[in-house]
Image 1 (tube, rainbow, N blue to C red):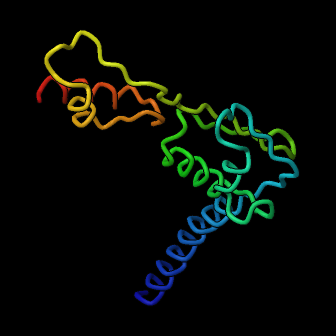
Image 2 (image 1 turned 180 degrees about the vertical axis):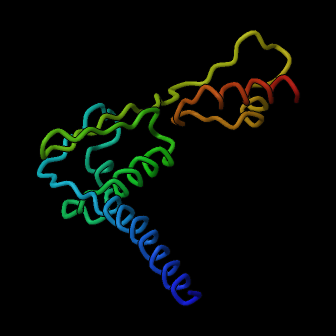
Amino acid sequence: MVKFLINFFIIIKFIFLINILIPLANAQSNNYDIKKVVVNGERRLSESFILNFFPNYPDTIFSDEILNDFTKNLYKTGYFSLVNFNINGDNLIIDVEEFPLINQITFSGNDLIEKDQLEKVISIKTRDVFIVDNLDQAVDKIRTE
């Protein structure tokens, strides 16, 4: 009877593991047959810059993991406020929005501190990507210095 119970539990354990591992294997093998990639919304950065974030592009094997890594890596550059993609048949459509660039930094209403000193205090520079949080930090630094 004890051997029967042990064998029974081994069989149950085996069935349980099979039921867990097979769906995981199927979930990771979700590849897409992409024939064409279209990038919308790029302004300063080229389409080739964006597509270089795919491994081995144009011979990339597209999967959920590749698309997720691609999206994360584009955000990590700090150049994009939005990265979305859609698969439409055998087309991959990538929509991006770039952060604007800072063309000029102007200090107004200030007669006490030289412009050069203020520029040293803040961390943003001309031609940097404009991010509101960075502007808020610069204003806070000026107030506390």
